[in-house]
Image (tube, rainbow, N blue to C red):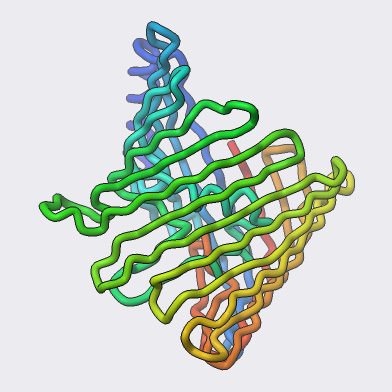
Length: 338
């Protein structure tokens, strides 16, 4: 039934596009992995669907150099046969010489920054294992999508771009008090081989905490084959007390192979011995842009009062961590883009 609904939607979009839109695209990504996960007490072998998705895009050229566009993107749990419609980056917008405006649910500038420098995005060893914050009644904050979001991105001038993302109510349903009002912004400098960015995000909570984070990120291509990456984050007014995260990564291209690694440290909050060190190494085998096979080994070494995972962040199958125990993962994955 779900397959029928997706097929019907795709046919409808194509039918509409043939009359009204200049460009209609159906796209997707299938990302699955076979993982051996260990929380320091127990271990098991799992199959995980990692941010696999199906999406639809359409755009229409308008008068005055304007362009209208829409995107509908949804998670497809290929491992367990499930999914949710339009739960990923889904929006409608308008772009022109003034920049881009869009409305819907989509990644914040803070999250986009992390994705640009993460050597293991959506894999074992993802930075989100230590950079994402959760607890109390706030749920997950940072590295998230704003619900009911409205965003503006400026034109790029001298390689500089500004982005601002706002939600009057980062929750479902109607509101009369605008609790959970949140915003995120960034400024980036990008040219071939260089990326520098700074972002700030504030999330209005409902339990007396208003989590906020400053994040700096960068990559630099020493040569066409070697890239260095780094990220630093300072999070305040979060459950357990303020916490910093920082680290570096590197990748090396060798023919059809890419060797990569990264190490990140999260410091203590108000509780002593509550930090952790994340370390991951891996290799990709590229078969063109469409197909990648990879292997990753990662470990999050938790202090006595820390419980950070190695298998969180963009992954369908995650093993909770146990305080004071190391979390490890060995992952063999396949990524197919279409």
